[in-house]
Length: 191
Image (spheres, rainbow, N blue to C red):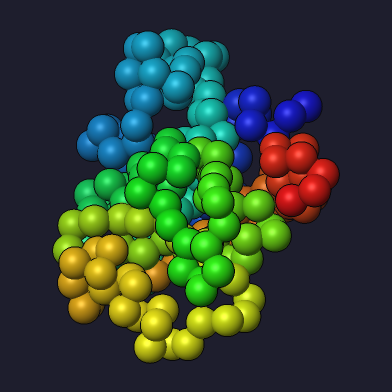
């Protein structure tokens, strides 16, 4: 089955994202997870024997938010972390960018996935109420240039960054998928 078409039960979401089921239910009750409604992408539940099913986009949303919370975003209040996670999990190329010196003609990222591996590491930067996803090439950028570009994109000199590629790899592996294969299927064999 295609990774992007996965439906994951509540207990598995909690397990792969590293939260307790009670914490996950708390996020749902607070309306932090996008799609938690009768017509949203979190389905089921509410009746005995009918379990909630989360789309892979919601799984990634929770995983990214958890990573941001652990990094201190929101100072203990998960609202800011979920707002930033929404950008990664449910958005694609919008608000994304390229950090390296040689900018490709197009920078394309699918919702809930990192950039194609050929683009380098995918990072999510959060600061000043903004979130941006960037492709960071393995070579060709100094720490100063990296900081300057993030500072400009987020319009602040203070920000938090997480390695969204590693989060994706961890979650896809825990769900029984090989991360490289998922990305090859999503982006094509040449990426």
